[in-house]
Length: 350
Image 1: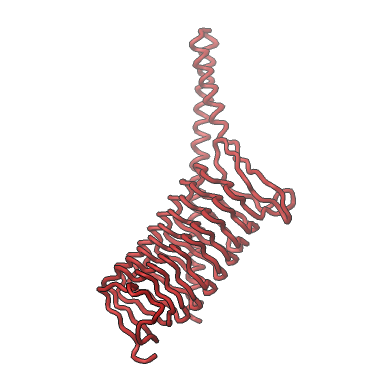
Image 2 (image 1 turned 180 degrees about the vertical axis):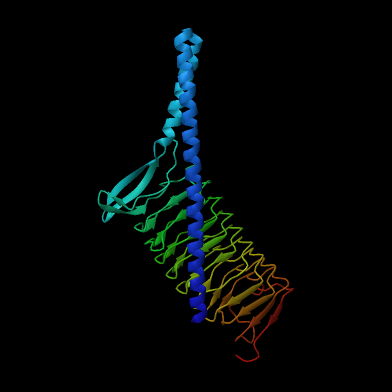
């Protein structure tokens, strides 16, 4: 219990640090954009004054054309001061953001209130494919983020969520293709991460999930090649198909104590894992679930699984697999579930 408390405290400290880091980077981006806009505006004003002064003196058509172009550039720079406009729809309990009209200035934050009612959600596809969206501050009132809400936002580095965030559900493919997203941290209310939610976020390094999370969708963290740390709640009973497949930088894996099922290819191609411990309540280990975990040297199975699928430990060629309670292979196991080069040690006593 003490170890879990210490780990939870470490996660909290890491979240606070990541939140502060994101806030500081976002501030630098805003300050830089503001300085560039003001500098450009001053230069345009100077050019505009000179151009129209010369045009007034020379009264030539070409000079008037140049002055007109300078006026257009000045107007364009002024548009950078026009903030992005969020679009809302009213629902029971508050408002949901369903879109964003961006002129030149990207959206930086979502307000907590609109017309005396809370903003409680972000709709499906609300920011999908938006460019120059680097960091977005999301208020504590937001409870749901819809399907593909931020999909293919290639500039997105992260969401800034408060410690007391009410966020409970993240929809399918919500951050899919956010190739520059470096970290994600949720408040303590998150319960559901949708299918392929972070699929292809190949620079995502850390994902801090709440202790209440119970459902992780198929392929949720698939192909997150830089992911080296993720915390899994003890409320998670089943790990999904391809849930962490291709997380080739994942070095540490602590599975929930009440875990019952590890599905097909869940941890396939996690080539940096050196030790795997399967908890005592796991009854199902799916096909190719730990395939190509080529660095794994020690695999401990504390349970008595009724099913182990074909190729479950294929290419775990240097591993030693130890059963805590199983004395021999069971009927529900596929004959090719172990790699022929790995050493399998059964329990002496059941």
